[in-house]
Amino acid sequence: MPQHAATPFLRRRSTLAALAGGVAVTAGAGVLFSSAFAAKPSPKVVLPQANATFDYQIGGAYTPPAGVEALSRDRGAKPVRGLYNVCYVNAFQTQPDAMDWWRKENPDLLLRDGSGGPVNDEAWGEALLDTSTAAKRTRLAAIVGGWIDGCAKSGFQAVEPDNLDSYERSGGRLTRAHNAAFAKLLATRAHAAGLAIGQKNTTDLLEQRKSIGFDFAVAEECGRYDECADYATAYGNKVFVIEYTARDFTEACSSVGGKLSVVRRDLDVRPAGRSGYVFRTC
Image (cartoon, rainbow, N blue to C red; front, top):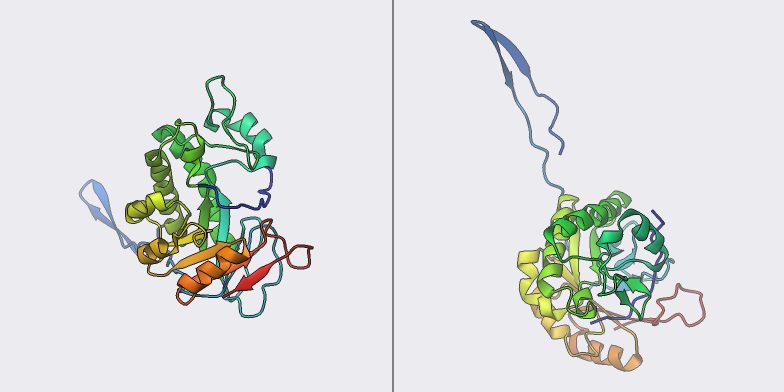
C-alpha cells in the first residue's frame, strides 16, 4: 500500500505471560496439568495535558519551536521524544495518492454514487470510505487499525482520525450513526494499543463522545464557528485548537486561550522554513 502522504486539511464540516509453573500429575488414566498464567496488563493510555503549547505539523515534520509541549504529525512521520505526540490518520476518506491501492485491493470499501463511481470530497480530491454496514466497518477497522498500531509502535501517545464528518459530504449515503459506529471500533483499537484517541471536529457527535470512546478533541476553526467552549466543556479543556486566520486566532485566544491549547497555522500547514509558514500561540 502506498505510503500515507500528508495532506493539509482545513476544517471540513495479548499475549499470555510465560508459564509460571507446570506440574504433571498422574491420576488414574489421565494426566492433569496445573498451570499458572499471568494476564498481560493493558497498555497505559496517557491523556494530553490541558493548555499544553501545541504545534500542528500534518503538512510536514520540522523541529518544533521552543516551548512546544505537544504536536500532531502524519502517521508516516516520527514522534518527538519528550513531547506529547498525536498521530494523524485519514480514517474516513482516502489519501489522493492511495486511490489506486483502494481501487485494486478494496474497491467495495469506497462509497459509490448512483452511477457506481466513488463519492468524492471534491475540495480535497479524496474519496469517501463506505462505513454504511457493520461488515464494511469491520474490514475498514482492520485496515485503519493497522495504521493505528503503527502509530503506537512508532512511539506516539495518541491518534486523531480525520474526517469524522464525512457523512455530511456523502449525499445522504452515510449517516452520523454509521461514522460513530466506525469511530467506536477505532477507539477500541487505539486503547488496546495504548493510545488516547481524539475527536476531530464535528460538534454533532460531542454527546456521543463517551459511548464512542474519545479522550480529547482536535478542533479546527472552533474560534471561527464559536464552538471552542463546547469542546472545552465536553473534554475538560483537553482540546487542541487550530485556527488559520488572524481574526479567528485572536477570537480563540481571547475566549479560550487561557485554558485550551490554541495555535495558528497557515492554511497549507507548511513546514518551518517554507514560504508562507505561520506559527503563533496565545
